[in-house]
Length: 272
Image (cartoon, rainbow, N blue to C red; front, side, top):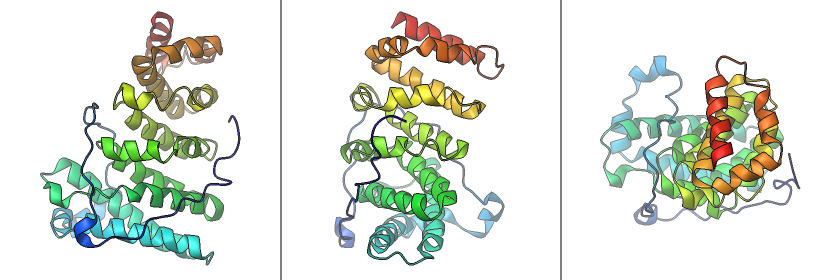
């Protein structure tokens, strides 16, 4: 990783929960196409016991969003053990419902639009990093589902300057790395205006690092993110070449699962 540790001095405050009538903000216009990266519900074997669509129609998304804000505020006020155990089911339920909302016909008034959830989620990610790193995938899974089809939540991620803290999670584990890279793909695929916030910056340095990983899924997600970045920011491809990017790709040329994508990225970089 390059540069300072952005988690060290970051202490974003979560705005107080507003009355029900003020919870949502309007969706900002975006250029990205709907994403296919929504993570499937967890504990799928038990989903027949819960009518997710009914929960959504009764406002469960907004209620869980407000509960997430409360939990983020609580971890800022106390270091008591056990709060992570309360946060985990909230994160998982919200992620499952977002998956349901994306595939079903959900009215706008029932969608989650409170962008403060992104700030709250990063407070919880920082808390997990310090107290229980094994729970980081739960928070990142929710962040993926928030940003998959929402330019608004992607904009929140950028406006709160949270890309660098997200990149700092890459070394935690391969699972965490894949989720971080998937979230960044969600942002990048929204178009040139979003990629302008990804490069110049620490992203390219971090991706050169993940290309050195041996995990095929991490490398594959890195290749996808680089393709999106080069598509919308051709100047980044030139910087990639100048930083020995082709040599980083060469180590994966003979891997059956990656070689087609490696070749495609090489061609994109050389002709950008």
